[in-house]
Every structure is written in C-alpha cells, then in structure tokens.
Length: 388
Image (cartoon, rainbow, N blue to C red):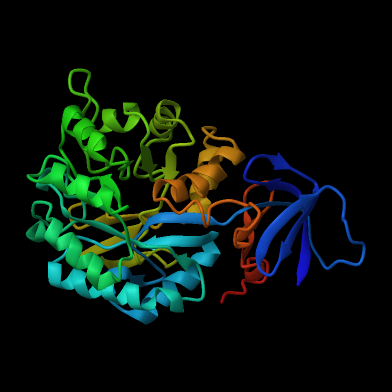
C-alpha cells in the first residue's frame, strides 16, 4: 500500500525541501515529490507543518515511572510506548552501575523482550558502568565500581544475546586500554564517562577505539588551560561524538554552544539521560538504588547532585533552537542522525531516506510535536493525546 505525506517542509537525509509529498510504501520511505505523481493517491495532509526523522535517544534510563533497572519486561514496553510522546522512535535502554549478577538479569531481560515492544524501537543496550571512578560518581553506586573486565563484558554480551551496542567507562582505570580495544573490535561503541582522566588518558582511549564522550561536562574532569582534561578532549579530539544534556540544568546554554562550535553540530549528540520521573509529576522517585526528588524541572539526589534528568528529547531540540545556538535543521540532526551514527545504527534509523522504516515526526514551525509515526502509521497524536 502506498500513501503520500504532504507538508510545508521536510528534513530529508541530504537536504531540506518542501512543500511537497513524501511517498511511503509498505511502511518504508521511498521518494519525495514536489508534485503529486498520482492524483488518486492516499494523502496524509500536514499543511503548515514540518516532517522530520524520528528522534533517536541513545542514553535513557526510564520514563513514566519505569526504570530499565527494574528488570521488568512490562516496564520496558511502557517506556517504549511512552517515548512516542517525546518524538522518539528508536532508543537504547540504559543501565546503571550495579552488581554483575543484576546486570546479567537486566541485559537478558532486554535481549529476550526487545522485539516485543510496540512503541519506540529498541536498537541495542547501553551499559553505563560499572567501570567508573569515585571522584565523578554522579548518581552511580560506587559499591559496584571496578576495573574494566573483558570477561564481564563477554558474559553480559552472552546474556543479552549479543545486543550490547554501547558501553561507558573511565579510561584511567586499570585495564581500560585492553578493554577498549576488545570492545571496539566487537563493534561495541565505547564511551568515556564518570572519569577524572587527563587529556592524554582520554586521547589514548580514543586512539584505541573509544568514540563517544558521555553527557559532556557532567561527571568528568573539566577544562583547565594547563590540563584540558576530559572536557577538553571531548571538544578537541578528532572523529568522536560528544553527548550533551540540554535541559538548562546540566549545562549552561553558552557552554553547550561552545561545545557545538568546537565539536561541530554533526558530532554533537543530544541525549536526555532521562530517569523514571520523565513524563511524571514532581515528587519522589528512584534512580537505581538511590532516592531522587524531582523539583523545579530537575532530578536530584539527597546530596543535591543532579540524578539524570526528566528531559524529553523533543524539548532538547526545541531548547537549543530557542537558546539561539542551533538552527532547526541542526537541532533535529543532533537528535536523530548524529546519535544513530554515534552507535553505528544510522544504516537503519535516524534519517528520512529511501528504504528506511517510515519512522518520522510531525512538528509545527515552533517545533511543537504534533504526531509520531512508526512504519508509516500514526502512533501518537498530540492533538487528541492519543497514546498507544
């Protein structure tokens, strides 16, 4: 079955164009036309609106009162469905530092159930930890911190059915170099996080295959003019991606702009680091084993430290445009194509291109989300709050 989507503007893989018609056939994108090629064709009319690729969240812990670490298949499905209201059509469920045994169970649960979700598609697992350093622990439990272990990674990979797509570690820990080389060789994206590494340590990690800096500026050694640290490495090293949380709490807009200017907007990745309180009222929640209070738009531990976020990816896109640090085209790219590229899944999602699943979002010119489509079917409509 073929249908055409009409809109004023389209953010295609290689250009912005419109008005016109995007053809979808059998749930996949096929081609774009300035004029309707078939007068009797079925048309989905979004006049006055913009069509963009579905967003890709490569760092998210939970949503709508569910956490990946709950080890609950029904909760995973609820997160998947809830994310459609954020404009997210693909994501990586993200774990927290925990015991090897607990992580065995969680990755096995995801590996066994990812094909069963009905909302945003699960494209792999992001293991955030446990190979971190105490100085920049963030909301990670130091009780389980340890040196990188190839044996542990192989066990998790086995339990998950080979579904681990990304893993984060502190590059100054013993054995990090060998671990990075092994993981990168296994086509797992290696990310650097929760680290007090020097610039040279980060540089060595990148030379061995690490390619992502996790929530840049948060949980890492800062930039100093005599020791650039992890933050300096994230901005200066070639051919890496830098994540950033643009909720207005984690990073000042001017600092986000500095990163984007230094790194380039093609290599800057908007992520949420959202925890279970995303999409929920203010109050008390859990992040892994830690109690968290959500107040005034931020999630904090009892110590006052930030504990993930309640950011929705659609709002990160809107924020960076409203802050004047990115164009709509750049913002959408940083939340769709760039994250997909960062973990090697850009061959299947993150762009509107022929042969890709017709996963897309409908936006107003003010970047308000109107609808989310999966495989050419509307699965979320903000105008009547129809949720899956």
